[in-house]
Length: 146
Ligand SMILES: O=c1ccn([C@H]2C[C@H](O)[C@@H](COP(=O)(O)OP(=O)(O)OP(=O)(O)O)O2)c(=O)[nH]1
Image 1 (cartoon, rainbow, N blue to C red):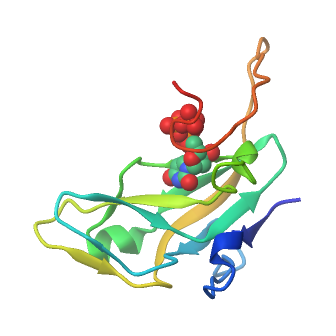
Image 2 (tube, helix red, strand yellow; image 1 turned 90 degrees about the vertical axis):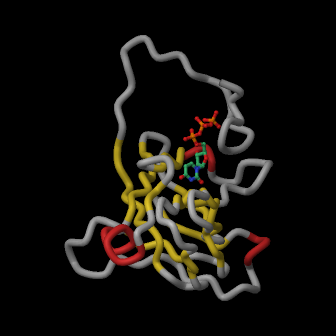
């Protein structure tokens, strides 16, 4: 089973669940949950109001939408976002998916609530033969302390 849910703290904010656009589109488009303005040279963590659940041997990879780069001049600050299966319902933020957008331009860029800012693709990953990871995730962005 895999899917998206609205995080409880955005329950009343009219968040749309991600949809693929065509039969063979790989990506589930993610929308900005609020209006944000990104200043020149700034990285802003844009909330989606969403969390994703999936089997333990899968990951949700967050990629830029081409139109965000081409039409709006914005980039994903982390290149590709990695949303781990055990991020879902973590005790820190429930598994809230955040999209770090970078504005490399000389002028501010305004993003409206509901604008599609990224796309998520569910992907299987492999483990090495001697893998021994048993810890439990407590949050996001540096929560494993490395
Ligand atoms: O664009 C992103 C990337 C990550 N995450 C969330 C989901 C992911 O499971 C968690 C941790 O991300 P990652 O492993 O890339 O960050 P880290 O800096 O290595 O932190 P950690 O030590 O928590 O693994 O943050 C997002 O919401 N958006």
